[in-house]
Length: 181
Ligand code: URA
Image (cartoon, rainbow, N blue to C red; front, top):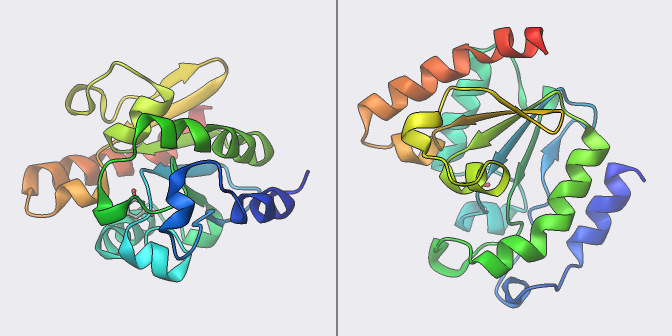
């Protein structure tokens, strides 16, 4: 199946209650042939309004980080663990993550990225459970043939200089990690 066809199916999803409050489903954005897939947590207000991932303040930070390694959005694929905005930006509930599980798994299957960058602890938890982002960020991990790379969530860097520096450093390691896969 093509990514476009899958994403069309996701657009009409009503598997969890979030469909009742969403404006748009945020399926994801980028190249279906991307070597790197970035996975965030869930859409926020701006993403819900526009239907695009990471377009708010966290998105600005993510764009700068992507540019810092010589890439642009069209080179990569950006998706989220949960594709509809949780009301008031609360954390996604376990049942919402579960309802969206198949969609994200199928996107990964089609894109077949060499590297999956996990943005923040919720995204890390979805693929590499029972770890701590403060310890595991910046350390690539191979699991069942897939390489994952947990980093801090861009939103976690707002007003936290050390976290921003760690995230910038972790990003700069991405080209080398990718080259070794
Ligand atoms: N935060 C996320 O995790 N995902 C988005 O798309 C926007 C903000």
